[in-house]
Length: 135
Image (tube, rainbow, N blue to C red; front, side, top):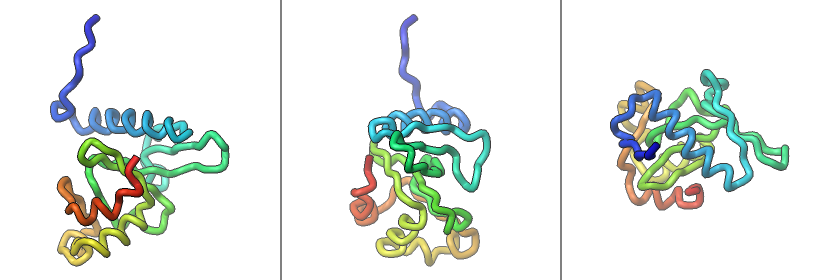
């Protein structure tokens, strides 16, 4: 059997989520984490990442782009998302703080009225502020 790489854009939304879970899981393995996909969002998490030391467990919401959502605030939830061939992982509430410091997203209709904002093309300023969270 000859293996052929897939075109990510040809995947449906469920297939993209599975693909992204596999990608981030492989990266987190390099940091000593074992990832377990959850059947449904548990406390906002798509998956759990258990560290080999047995002390750290991360609840992670997986996104296909940089996203903030009011429903995730105050839940000690991490968000993972890809950007420019890199993955980022940080606490959602920290991401909201960074967004507030480097964008006007928290003043938009989307955030104020719907409690959500996402971007496939965040500014260089914002992404530079997130550099320490790049895996």
